[in-house]
Image (tube, rainbow, N blue to C red; front, side, top):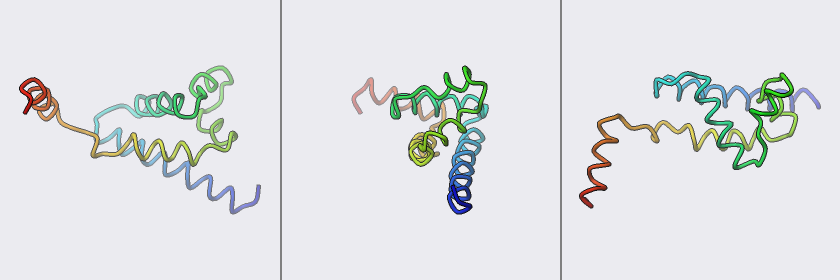
Length: 104
């Protein structure tokens, strides 16, 4: 792998971490909860349980994803899952439930 490839992978890892950090901050969730959620979704999309592999191998899941050549796919999942527009306040959520009940 040449320096350009390494730099590109590092950039993708950085972007994923940035999305996780921003989402954790905006949603008042722990970073670990957000990472776990990301890997849970990735398990169904990528058909591989990176959290379990990480636990069994004692290595970071992101490292295993990178070695599998699937960082770009994880980034796409991150962009969709960790989009701040997906967040809603408790009040907005309760209002949406009421609207569903009344058919509004």
